[in-house]
Length: 205
Image (cartoon, rainbow, N blue to C red; front, side, top):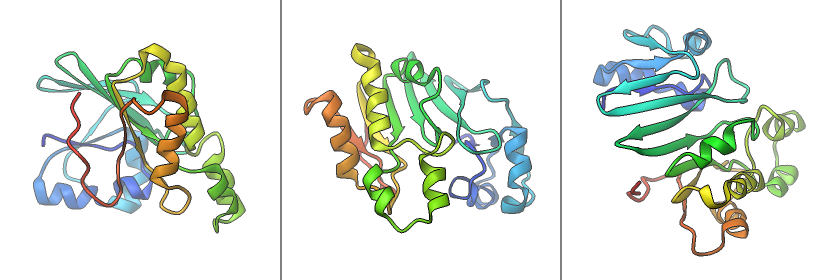
């Protein structure tokens, strides 16, 4: 491992970054705005390297392209990891299907794609109204059917496989997220689930 790249400052994405760095000593990459928003969560870090959203980071033969998102963070980014001509998208915490997102998804060979909530479960669930509105709003998360519609837009340029990712534990089930994709791509297209509880299968790009 060469580095840890922080997508945005929300607690579920940064809270162990300082522990990782103190244990393993590798640098942490984030934008300046993200670092400013993490001081109270991470404390002092020994080696922080800044980039701007839209920049490409290089680690040997691997390039990490950063993409500005519409998520409600200080300066959130998604990633396309490229090596030897193959491209993997890591598209979570997106806000909404912003301009250019479908093109980015069409450009990768495989992708982890946010499918955060089922609309029915969110509506009838226990979250307070303000949190429900935040999640399904334009700066929150992609729901199952929004993610499926995004894959549908790719048509013949869709990735080799999709792994539905960043599923809410309370407002979604893997089966619902996968079924939403199946309605668009059929039963023969490879759809995986990136679990929050266990290491997933080894997937090839």
